[in-house]
Length: 359
Image 1: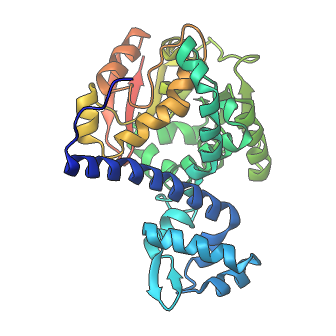
Image 2: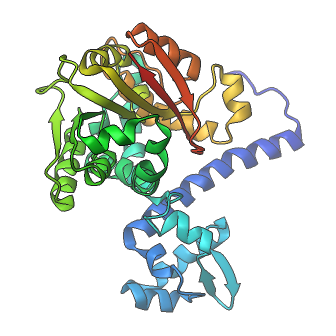
Image 3: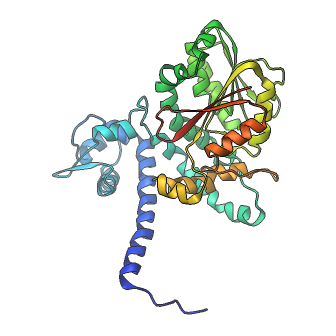
């Protein structure tokens, strides 16, 4: 074994701080997920400063465990420390960690964290063979985590804010047309549209059995009769041009063959149809992603654990990855699939880019 090269003491200190800061972030993330699961953020929302005993009483949990959890979340800055052993969840904390109706709600993404970390036991084989793991490898909680992470925006902004920006689509949905959501996941976006436009018929297409299970449950709870879900392995997207409106939300970069999916969408969409695409904002190069995206490290990590892994779960997968579907590539692939019109749509979303394509 060769000896290490001489190190600069100050640089060594900074580097160690960086690495162990990442470990601290993992610990904080784990305890955010635990707090979400135990309802601790919900109990603290708008309750004012609480001691560990008061929070334990509100949640019927053990005070000593609550106290240590509060200490960690306070030290991390997730909770505000108010002195005298009291901690508080700020209004911003309520929006991000407790209020599932707020567009900024993000605690849902922590639901899938245990499953994401568990797949690292299987990833060494992926690094050797090149084959990744499908989303169902994350288990039911993986599907639920994605649903809870994406649902707030769909519920708050899709129908009132986003759809009116797509030229002519609201009038068509009101009049009654056929709609497909490809890669529909747990069906939240589809069901929001189905509730808002009862004259139209909505069809969701999905590969994940865990997500489809959630979609059927959500459909039953919504009580809508104009929404239907299909497993694409047994009920593929029809190639008869029946759909006036097609959507793909945060899924193209996860697909093994998004090019083939786009070709199928072209066959399924009407000659005067509209396709609304939402996908992760990305740049054409690694350098630009790191420079422009403050969440680049997290997103590349998510890519290894989930997105790229899913995109490489078949031998011929393209493996685009979380930050691999940049605007130039999106336009190139969409046009190659037979769409003549392609435009970017600015909806002010912090994470997603939006595109509109037409035959």
